[in-house]
Length: 100
View (cartoon, helix red, strand yellow):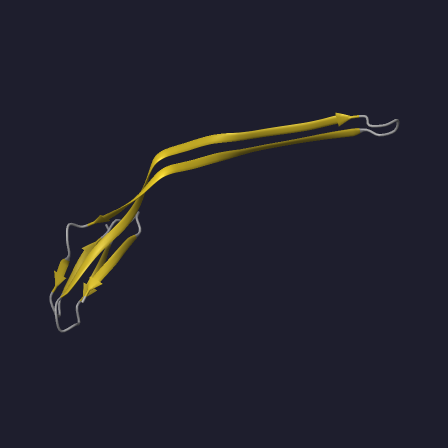
């Protein structure tokens, strides 16, 4: 686990907390989209018309989105002139909150 070092150079204690947000989806819909078209014709005594087309793609829809704030059980108090190492999860965005 990576860590961050917080040094308190202030004349009083401070508090710090690491939080991270995680998004959960209750319903995921994944599908494929396929479309095709064509045209063949002889519109007149001299003309000839031939056309073709096609398309494929993926469709993804998410609904019932929830954002959950994950945090350690409380604040960490850092006394004046002290250092503290705090760890966080590598695969998630994490935020440091410092209270003076």
